[in-house]
Amino acid sequence: MVTITRRLEFDAGHRIPHHASQCRHLHGHRYALEFTVEGALVQVEGAPDQAMVADFSEIKSIAQRAVVEPWDHAFLAWKHDRSVLDFLATLPGHRTVEFDQPPTAEHLAATAFERLRAALADRYSGRVGLRRVRLYETPNAWADAGPDAG
Image 1 (cartoon, rainbow, N blue to C red):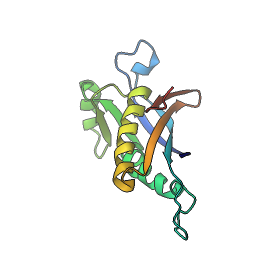
Image 2 (cartoon, one colour):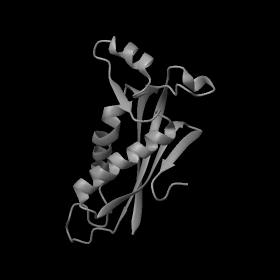
Image 3 (cartoon, helix red, strand yellow):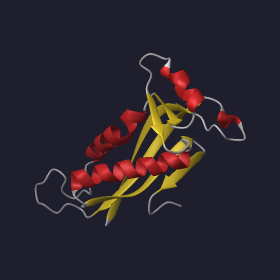
């Protein structure tokens, strides 16, 4: 098995309502999403992806559709954070994405892992598997999700 990793970036706002420090306030981040996939090298002579696990541009497109496009320039909100959700509802055309848990880096990484895992399984029928998602909230702070996390 061989692994390959791709990195994408997006911007989003969030807040962690019960946080003891500044993250309880509305704010935003330039998130970076790194994901590592694994699989055997394609051995089909003359195939466009010969000697690859998967084409980098193809896995980029999959991640764009599954995670980046829905979250980019949106406010990532906890479904029980009613004051923020009510406020955001007053902004015409505003993009809000609701989550079952507060949108911490850890929860977002775990959610991104599940979304990407399913999208990759749909495309590659198990030939390419997701090993890890790393979500950077800042350049110095990130969360890992998946079997290779930690």
